Image 1 (cartoon, helix red, strand yellow):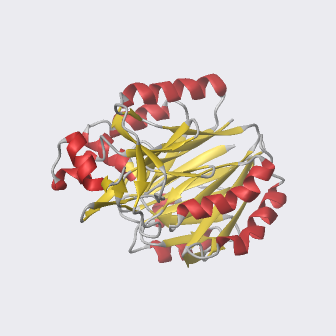
Image 2 (cartoon, rainbow, N blue to C red; image 1 turned 120 degrees about the vertical axis):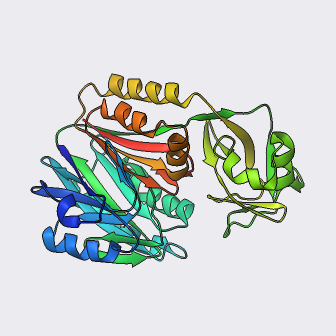
Length: 351
């Protein structure tokens, strides 16, 4: 297979599509003002080609912040795109669509991946999709787009998740998740006074979540929102940790970017040597995939901000480009199989 990346910093879809021939699956990453028009134009230019889209930044050797980007798979891919609607209330109502799409491409655990863009209620959506994907052993990577709008096959949707089921006809595909954080101290918290719908974390071990965070890290209210780059929370999930970013301070509570439930076990994390961790990820991928045709990744907005502040973003993209044809988008939350995480990178590697 081959991966195509085209972009326009000015938002010209014509420019972004230049050089794209016979695509078999397309991902559109557009801006808030032009999204609907780009979806319509893309369908006219590539009628009938399975496609998904969202509002967000994309990257290859550089980052497109406000224009438009196109990532497409060509030459050796079988793909189908679909949508689950009403994700805030009943995504399971449409789950048979995903099952039909998997059967359509004859997907299997060895050579197939599901890529998704979502508007919200991510944890519930991923649990729903996983009921089908796990039966076939198919992994998922994806993320949350901006402004509550996504697209599939030329139509714009709200309150939905759009997905592409992509089968690599020329080899294997495998997904990875990268975590650049590790546990800080031996702090362990039981969450309470949570609001699942609003992602509110009220108390930790019976004390105000805000005060607990401030007293450990010695920060002011104003510093909390930037300190989450270095010290997010983590939710213990078996032998894995799901990162939880802080979004806002609300009284004595903390609003987060992912759901926290009463009785969840949380830990406090600190930023590790992210440059070394990225190199470890690259070496692992090289060991497991000596021959790579494409790498599609999703990087968290907070990772993008952190790497940019540390003057590492361009070096990061150069490092990832050493793997081969690498492209991706910046999400507001990352998806990895049935897990919704923050401040992480997930990717799919195609043989």
